[in-house]
Length: 202
Image 1 (cartoon, rainbow, N blue to C red):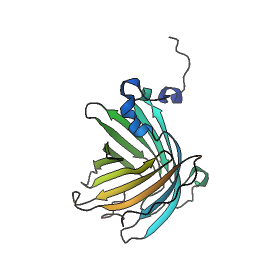
Image 2: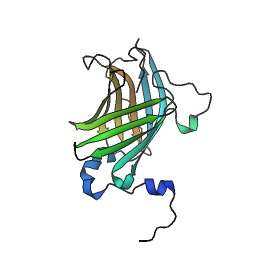
Image 3: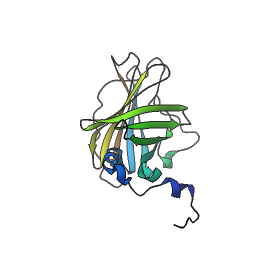
Image 4: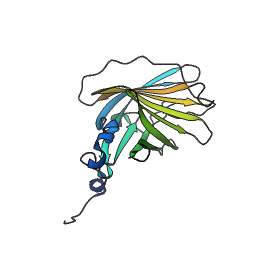
């Protein structure tokens, strides 16, 4: 096998899932591609803020992981003087999603350098949804969910609990439409939400 010159993107990118776990990789593999988003964030007093963004998913690491980039606002709207969206922030972060056969679940690593947000979660299917849960250093619980999943759309919820899961605050909703598909109808929000004790994570 000859080893010609390769770029970083060449060695990172994969054409599809690894054969030894292809069926399991479909959980997040169904999102591979580009998406436009409508975003709604909620302050603790119930105030709503609306914006737009985009998401891009791709296969990486010989098809044993999926990496994505989430951003608010869209690239065409990004300027140095653009104000950050309240609660959510000014996203330009990446997730590495790695399936682990030992636990039959996914390690979810989110990194957003601009907002200094770094989280670890475990993701699993739950009925027709995908639910990711993790704990912040201050003990608060994160729950990020993909729901209402269809071929060309999904609904994402970013929630936080500061009381061990007894109650939840919905902080951010994302309504995603696959690039090139017909615009979908916005879904109603599920709950009031906002920041808990100043911990605005998403």
